[in-house]
Length: 253
Ligand SMILES: NC(=O)c1ccc[n+]([C@@H]2O[C@H](COP(=O)([O-])OP(=O)(O)OC[C@H]3O[C@@H](n4cnc5c(N)ncnc54)[C@H](OP(=O)(O)O)[C@@H]3O)[C@@H](O)[C@H]2O)c1
Image: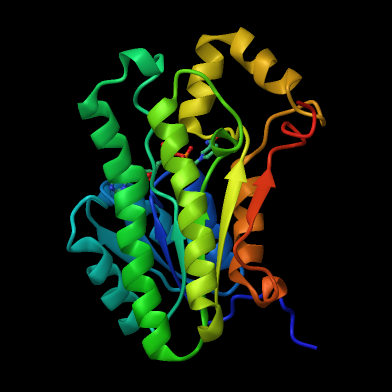
């Protein structure tokens, strides 16, 4: 029996692939036999990853807020053999203050990158998947922030909540085409930025750890492999879901 977790020969767009969860996902896709189309602004980081991968990959340098980028990513995926999956991962968290202090400009910035760009990538990818007639997978990066009221992140949390609503709507619309659409909602995953934050503030590490059921924060790989599951045939009866990967943090609330 073929391994249902394999991504053998499958082409997957990963936005925000230069660092953190996106980088880990591009590596996990490649290690599963897939061909990642890696999108981000920092070309040097993408090139470094490209040379370390066990299989073929494509580098596409650009800002996800550029309205032309989704179609360019889809074209690159088609050239690489045909688009199978999209991981809508690029996201930002630049502001940390109460809702009463969050400006219109900050709302616009967050929604532009964390929601509008994801919607455009999902739309262009879905159209190509429909045209290809092979089915496909869309995995949207949500967060436990969409499912709880984390303070000081109002625009970020709202964008992630909207991502989950987009996931459910597109799952219903695209189901008949064999295109599965799911969100993944990580808890605290130790990317470079989170590691730096915790090193500067050890109390923060303790706070993050204390909130989980299993007594630790997650690694990038521990968020990347669940994403590979959602990209694979192993999840072929699963769509419109928000899969929480948080070490039991919400369960412990
Ligand atoms: N880490 C966590 O604990 C956690 C928890 C829940 C959800 N998430 C979500 O998971 C996703 C990844 O988070 P992360 O922690 O891995 O973030 P990260 O380490 O800061 O990496 C963000 C990635 O997105 C890219 N990016 C940012 N803005 C971009 C833009 N305008 N155009 C193109 N690429 C852009 C960055 O690359 P360049 O700078 O090179 O463009 C980078 O590759 C986000 O959607 C985040 O909200 C993370």
